[in-house]
Image (cartoon, rainbow, N blue to C red):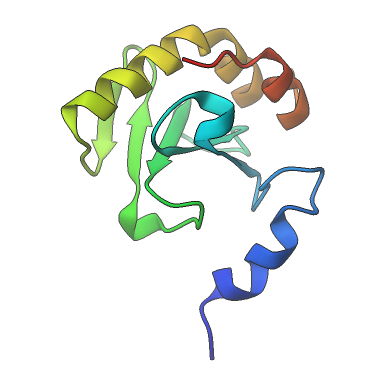
Length: 120
């Protein structure tokens, strides 16, 4: 039997025109200007504060991701990434902090986030 992503991935692009999966939207480098894939989400009742997830691939893989907390300041919670990539992701997060927080707080939806998002 295949991985859950083998089943889910063919359908993710059809969900509201995004890669929305379990409340997360995957943002390709063509949208963000980054050399990595960024996953953003609303809080969904999470106990932790606003986070983003970073991966090298468009397939969501919790084992291959870097989790970044954004408050009170940018910090890596889990995983690691190249220092150059980290600098770019940090800049992207700073440029998009208001939109990331609004999405996290469910003041905007994923489509609203993408409309407000700024590329680096």
